Length: 248
Image (tube, rainbow, N blue to C red; front, side, top):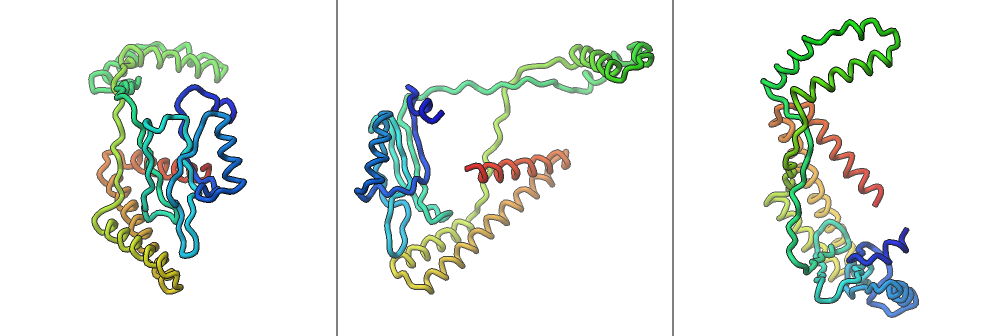
């Protein structure tokens, strides 16, 4: 499967933590380079992506079969990890993405009234006389489906895009800045007390982000017309993100 993916003629970009330092010329780095070359893929030489008081390594990679003028990479200190983030910009022609469509039934007061009228005019005698439960259920579903298709037919419409959620404010930005400055101080000094200060600042920042996320979810549920549905949306989103982290 990996071989098929790497031999694709489509543009390929591989990112992640490879734990092989590209800043050092050693056997592991050479083997990685030779392996990628078999698929016409090159590894970009990023600056240090993980720095400690005693080491500076570039162990995260960006590999691609694109030309150098088609991709821009840089590393950014985010304060979310002891690794930097890798930002990748692809240079390509602007291609307008088709608006996603969705097929759904539209229920209005008029259509629901028509549905009720259709169902009230149905003869349910046949279903009531069927002894087989499965057969009776299938017959009921057929009648309901037929009535729904008349009163509330499927329509195709533009799919609403989910708004981007932002879980930070000015206070969290300040805490992030303080944490990054504390980490930079520790990288310069290597002192145990500076390391402890980094841990405290990181904890303050993490707790603030968790509180902002909790408040945002609470506000979303409170403002929703259907609070039960909103609650399950929050629960399912949290599960989705948690499962995504477990499979990374």
